[in-house]
Image (tube, rainbow, N blue to C red; front, side):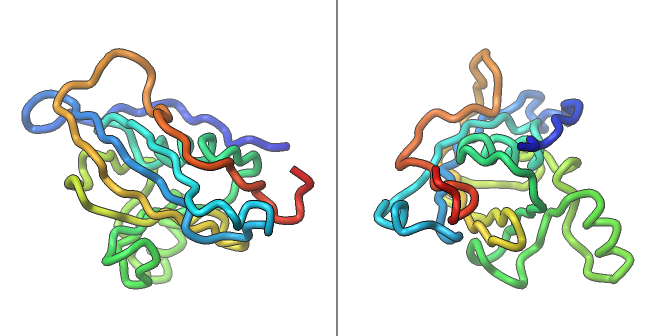
Amino acid sequence: MARPRKSKERLHEPTDQGHVRLYTLEVFLISGPVSEKFAKNPVISRTIQIRGDQTLEHLHRAIFDAFDRRDAHMYEFQFGKGPMDPKAPRYVLPNAFETEMDEKKSPAGRVDQTSIESLGLEVGRSFGYWFDFGDDWWHQINVEAIEDMVPGGKFPKVIKRVGKSPPQYANSDE
């Protein structure tokens, strides 16, 4: 099965304080084509740590891997009143950004150019992540912590898993 291609990592400018912060995000699966086998799980979530100089594209790849997905699809992040707010500012893929700008839909930005730090996130804030516009996997992402010190190691990384990942496609025999 196809896996998303890894693009060259782009680092963005550190914060005004001259350093990069560490964000702890709890990603909840809130809706999607979940089979009966997995519908019994009351909570399916992953906690991910990501540096502020990493992009929404990095966060997408971390979520993709954390939920054991294997087939790439379109996705976007939404920063409105809730994870499924139709009027929310949206961050989209580069090709969708160009198309939507031509159609005067004005997305807020591109996932590959938007750093986590640039979003102005605060602890307690929630935002949405929509993966696969056909099967409609909806996620709520809660900002759990923002730390001024980033330990060594590779980021983003999953630090906690709750519940087993449902198959990407409900009719899979997984």
